[in-house]
Length: 492
Image 1 (cartoon, one colour):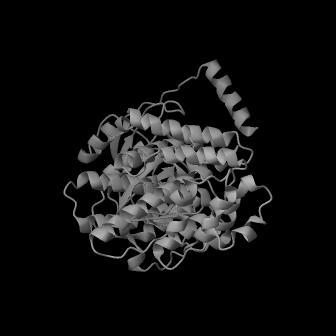
Image 2 (cartoon, one colour; image 1 turned 60 degrees about the horizontal axis):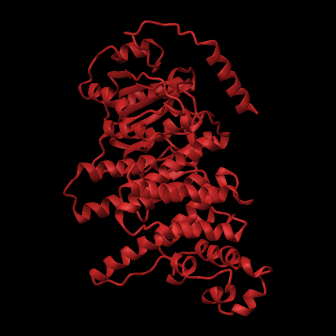
Image 3 (cartoon, one colour; image 1 turned 180 degrees about the horizontal axis):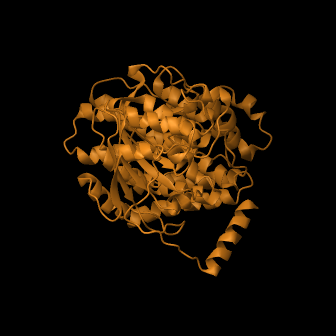
């Protein structure tokens, strides 16, 4: 870690420590939300300043998204909210004397300003897609939760120390922010819901190989990791990128949807942090969409995603699908098949469960997948890959394309290794899998299964390595006791 990255990381960690001690934000879910909206406004000001400079250079008039009067620097810098609260407030209201009568404690004027002036303004922005995106984000946030104005001012002071105007600092912050999402998610026990390990995402993208000009969708976006890594991949693969290609990437390439308010906020924030100022990222329950007749112009070239596992949807949602079923992963797979353009490609995570081998509607969904798409690869992951995010389920990476030609054979790979919350999966663990995939090589840990064998085996798609002898692994007694203690702790 370079010195500058360490400085940024230290500042962010210090902010979290301040929030931990505040009565209003002592839960992880609180301070990650508060940190996110504060960083959002701080960074968004620099985004707008850069856009305004570009507009001036091109001889165009820039129309602000957030009114200059209410941008970060005008209320979070050079204001004495404690010593001169009325003077600090007067720039934002027509009648400061009347407004001041609404404030019980003068030292809490800043909190009054945020909750009663700033947030209502942001939530009601309208008129352009950019303004409506900001309004959409702030409608999901309850407001400032930091109860102590002194803690709030300490947080603001530390955020002001980070220079977001330089590309290097913005890039460093984005890296630190993603680490923070991982750590906080693990601490709170909900990171697995919307944070997929970056090495898993990068492997999926390296297999799918998206191209500039293709539309890319993550219908279960979480913190937008798939879209961000796809953006990085395309920038890396295209050295001499043109202005028009840059505009295409930023405005008409990446699309995402997220059901829950906090991950939606994180995903939007994360995309903006990485340079996509007006992301096509929407707050919606993907599975509420009726997929029986999707218009061609609403389909995508590439879909990369990690859908929700183990959830159950009600009958109303199930009726949106050809095979009504409660399982969220089974509904997600149906959605993805129908949202994919002809010639399109998919890389997705699926759990090792009924969707891979179950009877009834599970089997019908797999049958349709194999008959209408070419499932060209399945990579089996060890059980601990998602344990850092609080999810210990065994998973598979499933790749298919909608070519009009049914599956003839599937290349399988079994990735081995023991991964835990401490021992996390890394890019290097996928190196052999990627090399063997490129050649569809058969080896000790990779094999090919014909469609005839799959049909005979009741359309079972589970990875069963024919080259591996069944080995019984006996755990040490101490390890078993430790696991039981952990389970008891999690249940409590």
